[in-house]
Amino acid sequence: MNTNREQYSYPVTVATTKRLLPLSLILITKNMSDNVMYSEVFTPCFMPLVFFIPNFHKYGIQIKEGNTNTKEVLDRTITFGYGWAGPSGVTSHTACIKHIDPSSVITGTASGRENLFKFGGWGIRYSFPSKTWAYNARNGQYVEFEETVDTKTTRYRIASENADQVALILRGKMST
Image (tube, rainbow, N blue to C red; front, side, top):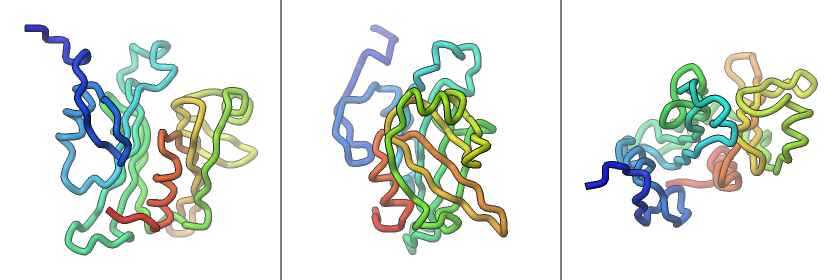
């Protein structure tokens, strides 16, 4: 029996996109609690450069329902960042969706040139001119939003495979 689980793929629906996923992602998805309404996990483009730092092996976004009985938008949280198998620990950030201004949510596409000159590269970066924290896992689609906790407003840009769907959820226009 072959113990290499990465070679097997099974059809699975994650975040309403149908495609074949490696068994390791299916196991991660199945182990998550039932209140996850959106999840994506992938290997960042720069992982071969930081293979000795396990906190950057995977990048992901996870949106959870807070109270599964009421299913209110205000109870939702978004966790994004890096970790061994998805966003976790000090290399990730969790925000309550009620603290995100729906009018501040925008989507776009970033080139390698933009990521390099605006944020200084990939990973967890801060841009002083735009005062934005970027979780750049790769070039491509992103979602940008502002989180206000008490009186402090912080701007984030997160890479996403399905930026439009994440933006709809952050704006409160998509339910489970």
